[in-house]
Image (cartoon, rainbow, N blue to C red):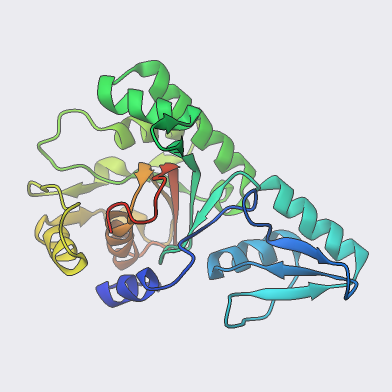
Length: 267
C-alpha cells in the first residue's frame, strides 16, 4: 500500500525541478548531431504516465527517467504525447501524479485567465468563475488516462469552521459532470485548522496532524483525484493524500486549478 510521511515530503522538497511544463522545457527533443531524440521526464510520475500511454520503457538516471529514441514510430508517439500535455504543469511530490492546469500569474501582478477565475471565485464566490475552474478540471480528467480511470473525486478539506470553501464547490461540479463519486463529505478535519502557510514544514505537518483528519473506509481500494484550487508548497495535499493511503486508497492523483507563479511561495 502506498504511504507518505514527513520524511518523504522533506526528501522530495529538496529535489529540483519542482515543476515541469513541456511548453517551457520540452521533454522530447531532437539531437540532430547524434541522429536520435532524447526523452527526459524528470519525475517518476511522468515516467509512469508516459509508459502507460505510449508503451515506451524509459531508464532511470541521475537527472530523472530518460530514453534515447531512434525508431520513427516511437518518436512520433512520444512527440504526440508531449503535444497533448504541453500546457499542463506537472508537479514533483509524493502523490501518484500531480498537475496544475496553469499558473495563477502570467507575470508579476498579471493573472492568467484561469488565475483570474481562481482569484474571483475565492474573493467573491462568483458562480461563473467556479464553473470555469470546474470545467477546466473536467477537461483535464477526460484527457489524462490516470485521472480518467479514477473512481472518486475529493476536495482538499477545509477547516470545519469555514462557511464556504472553493475546492469543495469545484469538486461538487466535477463529480456531477464526470459521474465520479464525491468523497469530500467523508474526508473532514475534526478540529479547527488554522493557517499553516507561515510555519516550517515540521510544524506545518504537526498542525495538520493535530486537526484530526478523518477518512471514510469507503476509499479502500479506490483511485482518487484530490482537488484544490491552488498549489503552493503541496504540503497540505500530501498530508491529505497520506491519510487517504492509510485508509486504503489504491492511488491518489492531485489536480490543481493553478500553481503559484514562484516555487518559493509557501515553502
